[in-house]
Amino acid sequence: MLTQQQKEWAQETLDRVVRKMEKVSRRSAHKIPYTTVNGVHDDRSGEMISWWTNGFWGGMMWQLYHLTGEESYRRIAEESEEKLDRVLMDYDGMSHDNGFTWLPTAVADYRVTQNPASRNRGLLAAGMLAGRYNVNGNFIRAWNNWPNDSADRTGWAIIDCMMNLPLLYWAGEVAEDPRFTQIAVNHAATTMKYFVRGDGSVNHIVAFDPCTGEYQCSYGGQGYKEGSSWTRGQSWGLYGFTLSYLHTKNVDFLRTAERIANYFLANIPEDGLIPVDFRQPEEVSIEDSTAAAIAACGLIELAKLEEGRQSKVYLNAALKMLTVLAEKRCNWNEEEDNLLTHCTQAYHDTQHEFSIIYGDYYFLEALLKLVEKDLFIW
Ligand code: GLY
Image 1 (cartoon, rainbow, N blue to C red):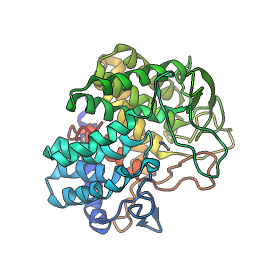
Image 2 (image 1 turned 45 degrees about the horizontal axis):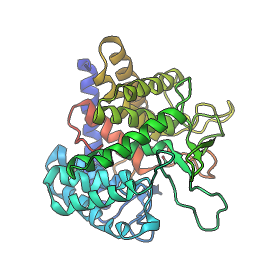
Image 3 (image 1 turned 90 degrees about the vertical axis):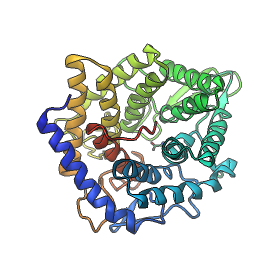
Image 4 (image 1 turned 60 degrees about the vertical axis):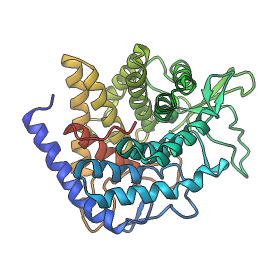
């Protein structure tokens, strides 16, 4: 339960976001943005239509439509959903990230409107995600192999995929076919066993033998190095296991979400600004605001499942990160397109601390959760 003061803060901050998004959505109505350059959204709806983040813009529009009933948001969301049909016809363009692409677009549309074309898109995407399942290893394969890159990713799975499983839980219900759910549950169980460490931190990438399914090794992936603690990966795990519990009521998933959450909370720096990796060298100060926004969403959901002091601990940690984001890492200039600043895709990339659309999406979702007006996307 939020205090009166916390409720007022959440509502005021949400109102500021909505005021800004009214203008941003008009400017970017025909785009699918990923980042913002010189105050202007880029557009990934052309050559980069397969980019894994292309569902989040539609997701923001569905959340705003759900909140306001304003038809323009719905039209923008529908336009982005239709553009994504090109990806459904492109085997190499699809990946484990089908959940990120079609849950906030087609599935959200279907949930709101019961549109049969959206149901069809969601089920096709779920079928492709299920098709990535490795039967011997009980995991969903992450990326395809990339041209001109020597790494063989055939047996790789990644923590991020925990957030894609809800596409399978949804498909299991809608198609009345337990195979989708079985694959999601098996992947979550494998992730619990091989990704989550004793202290509650998680690996980003785990490699299995693609033929026998045996564990081979782990990699640091988008974090600092092997054995480190990429913060967005912690957030995907925290929120993802919470969602797997919500969909299955398997208590092991809830306990795992709590362990990841407790580790996350123990590592939030005093200033509330989240680094790109909790184990990056002390002299490195690279941040990732997306990790804070995603973790906040997971913590708010987890708080609803807990009682008493534990619930308050999770909720207050979410509020602390969201307050810091709003005060220090938000671009409130209504003439510029991004919300969050200081988002980082990967520790070893050359570019750090820019704006990324999923940071904005989860920031909006977290604020909506606080005022109990979010559309359930996952
Ligand atoms: N799914 C990739 C990422 O979180 O960057």
